[in-house]
Image 1 (spheres, rainbow, N blue to C red):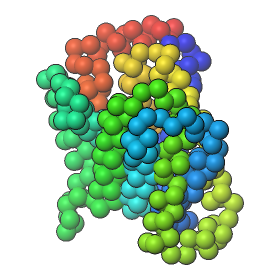
Image 2: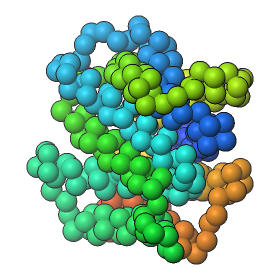
Image 3: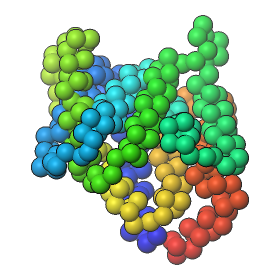
Length: 298
């Protein structure tokens, strides 16, 4: 990987990490209703990508379902969870989406998992459970992180369903995510939330900046750069670099929102990320690929 593309990957991970922290500030600090925030975000995405909406991918009904699950459904649950969860813990629990995708691929697509990746899945879930554990409380699993876990599952289901759709380009996919998410989220926000408009006006320009960052920088620019890098390089080179995203989120969460990061969190984070590496790299290939990556950077 050339240095320019590595820096782009670094920028993408930093953008995604910043988005988690910004989302926490929006739904918790500004008290913006989570469903309303998600609806506004995907409404902007839908408007910005209208030229790429057609032709309709086939089958259209599957694309609509995948678009909603990948966008509005997943992020609505995430925004609900981040209201009470810390950005750092949400970033780690969100990594459970990868082993969930692997397991769903076995159930829905008939794929097989090698024992090494099975061990990586078990290790990731163990680390995620340690992060989610809420000792001393009536409910041992954090409620906010349960929503984040639900978000990871919904996104994983959408990813597996997406494998059954071919010929969809990145911006066309973003267009359908925006369209399939904005309308149902707006309806849900209208029926379940209150004072959305007044709270948004009260938050003022910081809220406008946050939602524009979420819609344009994170969804359109960040994901488009990521898809371009995926096309240029092998997945087993790109996937390990994604580990930078939760690590950056943990650091930003500690620095900006004052996240509590103790020994339990450190152990859970380490186990989860080691499991992710095993899943993506495949056991005995880990060190050779790491050396190969280092050579490509020089």
